[in-house]
Amino acid sequence: MAMVKDNSIKVGDEVAITATVRKRVTEDRVSVLIPSYDQPHSIVDTTPHISSGQTIELRGLVTRVDDETVTVGGKDLGITVKRNAVRLVTT
View 1 (tube, rainbow, N blue to C red):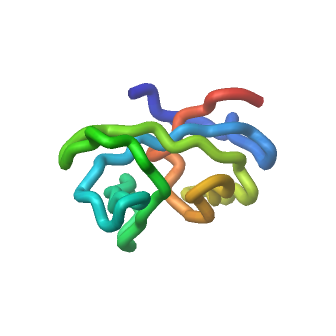
View 2 (tube, helix red, strand yellow; view 1 turned 120 degrees about the vertical axis):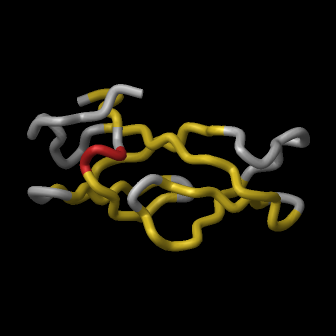
């Protein structure tokens, strides 16, 4: 996955984060691991055949940027991660 290494990300950009599925938590939620985000996180996902270790792409809009981190908001998001954990989708 191409990671952003410069200061090209700005507020309002759409970015993607590649997360790894840990396990299904409920019928409509799965627990995921997000790079550089050291907290448990779950998302809504009703896909019937999702499995542990599978990667999924989470997309959201940048709401804050600083020297080392980016805050991403959107469906199932509202997290701050290191800049190298996101991939620019659109500006």
